[in-house]
Amino acid sequence: MAKDVPTKSSARPSRPTLSFSRTNGIWLGLGTLVIVVGYALLARGDTTFAPVLLVLGYCVLLPVGIVKK
Image (cartoon, rainbow, N blue to C red; front, side, top):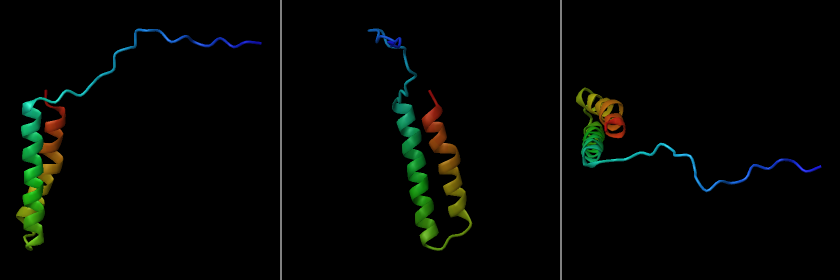
């Protein structure tokens, strides 16, 4: 008994793609810079401003850089 095998069609369904623009790059770069500064301050012993920068970088700037169109 032969099973019905779906044939491959030449037209593929479109998949959503991530398109990053210059604005996305700026947001991602700013987020990375804020995170690096946060870790540098944390290494120097700052326990007040460093966590704020890390949370800002990881929870605000990087996601905005990924999602913003």
